[in-house]
Amino acid sequence: QVQLVESGGGLVQAGGSLRLSCAASRSIFSIDVMGWYRQAPGKQRELVATITSSGRTNCADSVKGRFTISRDNAENTVYLQMNNLEPDDTGVYYCYSLILYPRPNYGTYWGQGTQVTVSS
Image (cartoon, rainbow, N blue to C red; front, side):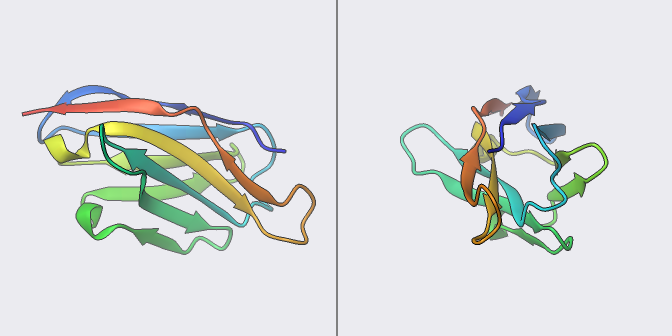
């Protein structure tokens, strides 16, 4: 199993920056995909960005050019650097990890979430 703990959320003005961290309870070297989702009030959870074990990244169109996802295997941590934040980026940001079958403990794991609030 994998426990994920997010940190780095907070209140920021539009145009500001935040860096989210997701610390895993075990080595992330063999975790196939890690990433971030977010959920705004009254909306469905949506994909923000993902990164594979080989370092390939993918970002939602709404954050391309502003957000960057990265992973530090030595620190068992995934980061989300968020620049030029907009009020629409407000929401709870969840870290997730995906371990593909037939690896041991395959499945999807989620963190508890961290609140990001962007004021206009």
